[in-house]
Length: 142
Length: 287
Image (cartoon, rainbow over the protein chains, first blue to last red):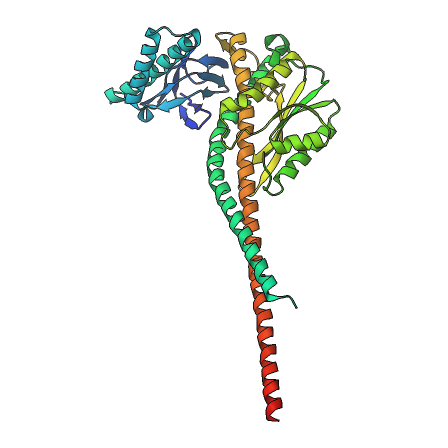
């Protein structure tokens, strides 16, 4: 299969830029998988996990919000933040999740509630990615 | 013949100047490193976003009018120019280059121009040349956060959406290298459509739907472009200042050398003259 180009960029840096076979991203309407020669697409992202497969290798990244564009066999992800699995501080993510849950239990104002839910989603995505890395190496799926 | 004491005083004064400019050079150098790093890291995001928006504008074409206020194209009755210049001087020719570029650009426009001045030097210039100043933002500091830039972005978004301005441009010093900063004029709104092959136009899928995607993407685009322009401007300012201060320090040191040489010459001449006097006096006594 002809590879497609993927670029994952945040305001601070280029997180990932490679030719890959498959991209799976957390679209706002649910997870979406993108294969080469996908139709032009524009979607917002929610916090979650981005997986890209290149050859037999799969890389997983945590992303929190942003936009994804597919255009001319190129996937551009403009993320609010994105980290590769090895960059995630699991203890910190755990702590953030605990704090967010705490805040959700103690009833705060609406704005705080929204932020707490967002924070909770972010930390959950990070933890998921970090844990996936720990449970590997798994056999490459075909 | 200049007086030795006068020269010595002059040397001391130049030495002090050199000390000051050297300190300023070092401060600018450390700020420069940080700001260059930030702007270079942020550039791919800003550029990619511009590209994506270009695709979007091309896809939407002339039907943009109803889709989102920030995609509406109108007859140009008023132009808004965001002029970004430093708060402070002592940065070589940067300020005058920026102001000249902005001034010329404004004069070239057929429609009336409103100016949003960012930075004291931008404000001073625009007020001095009696432009219609819409707003002034100063003291954003050397490390503005995205939050600091939002008040500018929101004003611009509002002005465009409400129909106050029909085109928006940003003028700032684009960082090319430590020694080169180029005044750069970027059209912000309306978004310029990219030139796409006809096979790629049409059939864009939006999730969840066009309104939502554009509703969150377009304001973010304006915010990020303005924020990035600020980063570029600050990187340029610090680089220009570092180079200007280095040149000043070098000139001061050169001046010290010249003055020292002159002082030695003067002193030697004085000694020679004194010796001649003494020898002449001794010979007169003997004779």
